[in-house]
Length: 221
Image 1 (cartoon, rainbow, N blue to C red):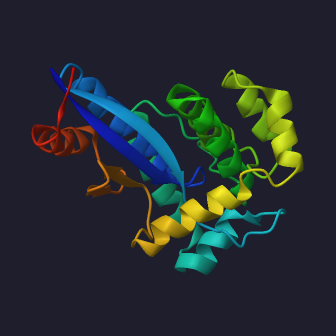
Image 2: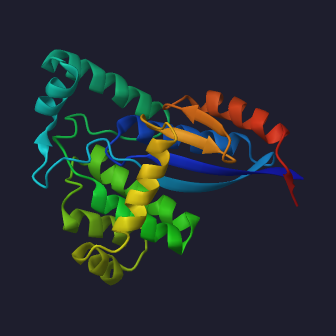
């Protein structure tokens, strides 16, 4: 008998700590194989919902948002790159290049979730690779469609979604739900609709927390 956990991973595909956190969570679940089964769902959060389609240079953006210098940004990125590498994720040494609007990516992730958890996870990871591993623009329809293709999803259907406003209302509704419930930083990992784990924690921290939650969760046959 194993414990069954529902995990809502609230995040943005433009968030480096979300990429680190997802890889750490996956490693934790591997460590707990046999103890825990997890249903993983990705929920939308936009770090920069007002960002225009042209994006913004990441250095300029970080300087405006945090007051950081180029030297501080470079040091922070290298620390992030090393944290990512420790959990098997490759971040582009040169950095991200630009910050992009991610609303369309979230619409596609919502659609992928309707195809099943495995499809949504595959698309999420493809989008993270495109941005953090390759520095590609997340507001570019061709980049999004290539991630869809890599995930084994229907490219024609995805193209149709991007050409209209399909799933826009659902994404905005979910974003409003989480912000209204106090989620203002990501990643935020919500387990069984009750327990909140915040930040890109190391695998052992996720594993310990999930083991404690699983001890009080109903068992799955």
